[in-house]
Image (cartoon, rainbow, N blue to C red; front, side):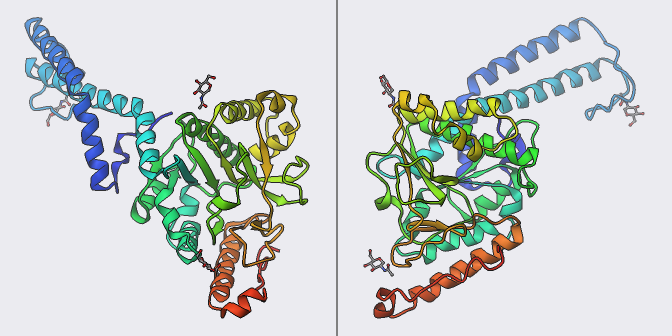
Length: 375
Ligand SMILES: *[C@@H]1O[C@H](CO)[C@@H](O)[C@H](O)[C@H]1NC(C)=O
Ligand SMILES: *[C@@H]1O[C@H](CO)[C@@H](O)[C@H](O)[C@H]1NC(C)=O
Ligand SMILES: *[C@@H]1O[C@H](CO)[C@@H](O)[C@H](O)[C@H]1NC(C)=O
């Protein structure tokens, strides 16, 4: 894992800057040592006499062509870039700590965090992320949950946007992969992004945090926590729910799940992630369907539960009762614009419901106008 380069601080807050400074302070001893070594090298070079520098080397410290001064300049510029690389390396080594700190700041009393992942395509203004955050504000008693939400940014644009609109942002990047575009469903980039997410969630569990993972195209209308099973390790929403939360024949949707941090879930996430090698070209949700009957799950002792669409609905199977719905997912919908349009419609439906007089609410008169664009 690697932070998105040392330059990724653009758009960061003062708190971020203080943290970066904290990194500097922590590593100042090795840094001073390195600079001392560099300086001694400089003296040795000087003692050894002039070296030949290739003309037009583009040395930014060039004052005169050739001669001992250039050697000093070259060496000092090397020390400089060396020091910068050391800082970058210490920054990278520190990513685990940075994640730990951000999760801790966002955690509820029982160490639960809410997580979502974001890339540039879903992060621009008036885009999915805005509608997502808006739902927490319009939902009934959901605003406080925003304090426990960490947005995991897959690229710099998503990170910058997160910092502008939200408190807890974490930059997660993958070497050599650009996740900033709108990934076509099931393209290589899409698959890599989905699998990166599974690996990241395992790390969160290892850090001792329970989590609710939510896709950003899910509207939050009520607090889901009271609807989770107390004895479930891994609880997942469904595209289609058959009425039995224990039945693995349900069609789970990886976009919304609640996972407790324990040895069983950590083993399960490792198993899930490793299973991608056995089933190449499938995404995490397909592979989950392939492994959900695996005897290893029994061996691990993982308690799996499937969440009812009555509370955790979506466009595939909408929640019928507005009086109990917690979340609504723009699943069964491919294409950013269609998704956006139907998410907005959902928010409007919810607002209309909230504005109803109590008697009308109780008589369950409200209904969804979706799927509309996602048909
Ligand atoms: C240094 O600068 C001079 C003039 O600015 C230029 O002619 C020369 O090629 C440069 N040398 C190097 C090593 O870049
Ligand atoms: C909103 O939450 C409050 C407090 O839990 C509850 O009394 C009220 O009935 C809820 N309203 C709706 C529309 O669910
Ligand atoms: C996993 O199991 C070990 C030994 O049984 C225990 O010490 C540890 O606390 C457990 N870790 C978690 C996260 O439950």
